[in-house]
Amino acid sequence: MAIRWEALTIDARDLLGLARWWAETLSWDVVDLLPAGVEVRQPERECVSLFFVVVSDLKNRLHLDLYVDDQDGTVAALEARGATRTDVGQSQDAAHIVMRDPEGNEFCLLDPR
View 1 (cartoon, rainbow, N blue to C red):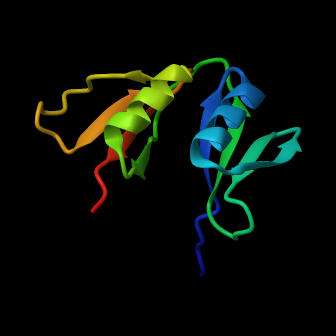
View 2 (cartoon, rainbow, N blue to C red; view 1 turned 90 degrees about the vertical axis):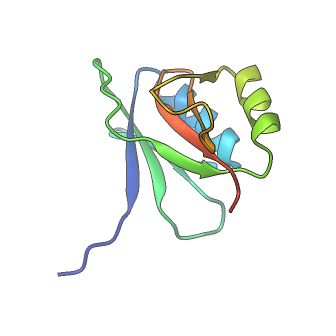
């Protein structure tokens, strides 16, 4: 049996708004507006996508870890677009910064390795 990761599904209240926010953040494209949800994928590549679905009760069961070249600059740019920093118990000297997108979904910005 072959198993292939296809998409990370993200719960949203504003389906298209959150999909567009993540598409802009990652420089990806909104590729499908389906009755079941909205798909965001890296341009011109066959890779894992983000798939946004509408739910009434958000549970934030998964999050993204993203490598960035400039943590401070990235944090400032994302905060200007509605993201917020958050404390989930990480240490003060952690190499990552935990943030929330405009709907409260957590993601981490990692130092480049």
